[in-house]
Picture 1 (cartoon, one colour):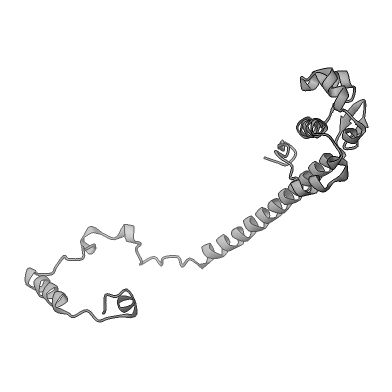
Picture 2 (cartoon, one colour):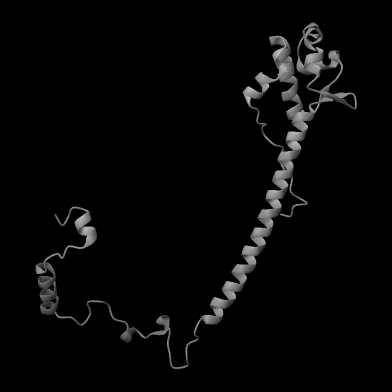
Length: 188
């Protein structure tokens, strides 16, 4: 899929340090109700980009009583927002989103460049490996071409006496301790 046809998802979340917000004098001077309205408005702006500017429309949009919105839509709350096309936006969150989108685009471009470089490198390596394969001479046969009489199993052609002698010698040979055997407490 090319980058032109891909649809990028919006950023799912924004990072905010509680200590930064609590230290913000504009936030500290708000009532609890103002803080709640401001936080709700910011979240709406994050998800939807903007919110209605007029208190009546904002109340309907948020599903809250108009009196509650009018009472708490103070200058302190509105300081976190800017008007654009008869809507309110949150410039801080818009800048944050733009930074995330820019970072995502840069990572995508870097990934594409890295992928192309890897593919080109693999093409060169594959060509080199294929060139290094020694072709069979006309007298040589590959494993699949060997006739059945030339193929033998491991124990084929060994007598029972030879097999028993081998097993007896194997079983009577003492275990020579090696570093692994000693380290695993098998040697002592």
